[in-house]
Length: 366
Ligand code: F6P
Image (cartoon, rainbow, N blue to C red; front, top):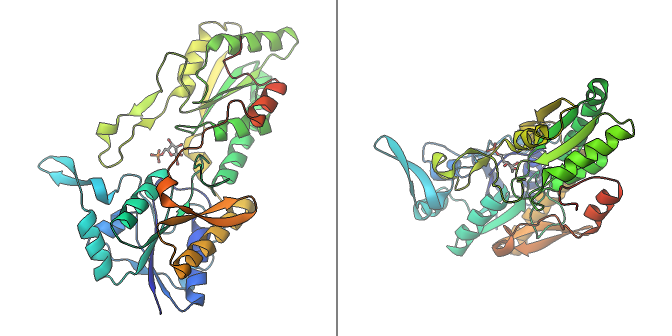
């Protein structure tokens, strides 16, 4: 039977989202189904004023290599705790019933939710309320436990690695310590991969509360052997042992989002370093959203395309409340119930051990 599929992208954007949308549309059209796109994540599903647009083959032509998302996204819109005006301020309200009622009214048979932990959790909640939903995992943080890789990570890793490489030449020219802050609110996958691939000297990640002394010691050792510059990569979620994460905006200031916005971990580390390291200037670079932008790599286009095709296959099989995932070389189905479980960097794992063998300091050395 012909179906009408809704598709949305939620949470922070990442390279490869358009590849997924395109693949969903192409495979669904191949089955004779119709696809409609909701704008700005769940905002487009909740808000009556936003009419979903039909996504036909023409609508997705030429978007495979485009960064961002043609549908727009939101990391605040959550039908279960939607920010609604009350007087001069916002309060959170559960609009999930009316959201599902609207989806029925629009003739949408099922929803493809492309997003990270937050979006996939909402997708699961909607499925639990009886609306057919399938998920598709994305995030530059690569921190979802049920998939080996999320698309977006490969592109972000290339961008962050490139940044580490570029900092080398200016660091060396000025004999400086360069601190590079990269995204990664709960996990340090991006920081760790970029540190190894870019040849950094230290990496500070959320999984390893750090002391600044081992980092200072590394800088002194390098200086003593004539390497008068150092690169320190800091994940935004990293914090000194006994300290707290650097918060840019409190959760209360962002209705609907439910989590703080991080920022400033690089400056915290630089300030600590400057108390001990006096013979080098220290500079901080925040890579920030540059890691989320730009053209997706071939890997992310490929994975995004496979995820999009896989999501339509889940719908064909009626396997709702599941998401597509990469396991080994295969696209598999995983229950949405566990989709938002965080995958942390394994601090005893091979990658961390290899990083240490390469001389990269984590700030936990004795
Ligand atoms: O996509 C996840 C993420 O990249 C986190 O690492 C980061 O904390 C967050 O997005 C920042 O999102 P925004 O600045 O768009 O609110």
